Image 1 (cartoon, rainbow, N blue to C red):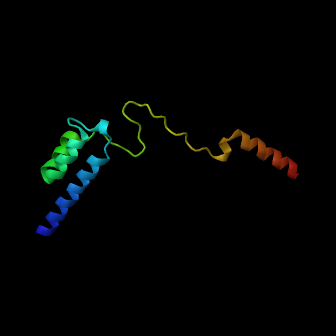
Image 2: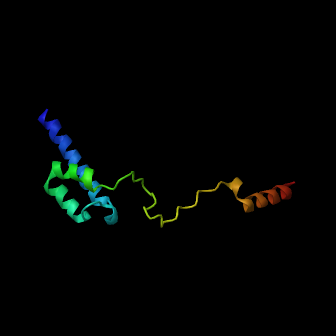
Image 3: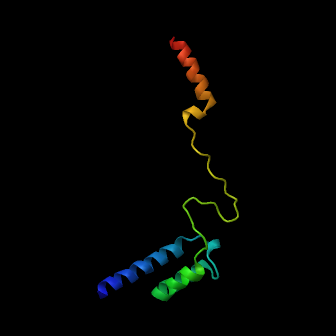
Length: 99
């Protein structure tokens, strides 16, 4: 049983440390990101709890999500060949040539 508790604490600490390290500097709340990383490193349980409650960016962060200021443009959605007018014109030309 103590081994499971120890493994759970280690997993929690690693999650919080990785999350603090990968958070963009400008999104860390209340303290600079470097200070949060040091807190999580030195105080594994309490630092992780403080990070999750006070330092972690509020709201979900999805990979590739837009920054809070909305400056980044979203990549264009992929188009299928049936959505490309040039492809359709070329296809019609090729079908006529085959006949």
